Amino acid sequence: MKSIASKWVLGLAAFAFAASMSSALAQSENTGMGNWKLNVEKSKYSPGPAPKSLNIKFEPAGKGVKVTTEGVNGDGSKNATEYTANYDGKDVPMKGSPATDTVSLVRKDANTTVRTDKKAGKVMATLTRVVAKDGKSFTVAVVGTNAKGEPVNHMLVWDKQ
Image (cartoon, rainbow, N blue to C red; front, side):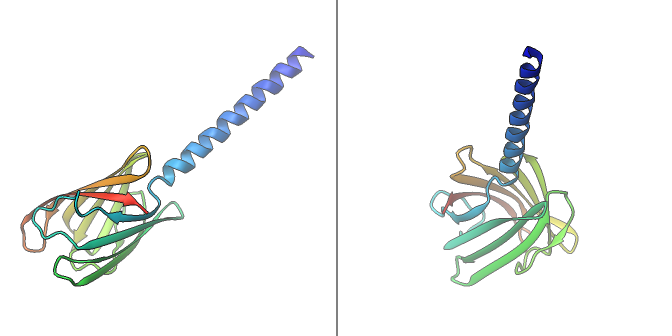
């Protein structure tokens, strides 16, 4: 009888462990999902100008993510972009961006993803996104070249909405 009870306890423990791992995996895959607002005051743009506002939405989409943005540029013009990508490093089209034709995503760890932006097949920028452990904010380091050929080095700070 003791053997059956210990097997039952081990089985229950294994099930609990598997369930917790499944939950942790689902959480890591969904890290950073939701609606976010650019904290313009905390962000740094080189070169500028910074946008007046920018909102971004991350939604789970299959094995990847659907990303939509809406904002107002520094000159007052409006912008909106959209793409859906898996974390497999494969290029997918980006809609709405004059500076980027395609993007690709790679997940480095539960809180870090890297996006590569291309225009006509040429890498224009690399964006490294790190979600804070508390899930209330994230940063994006942007390194690359803008349409004028100038070096870009931004640090963007986003707050959960």
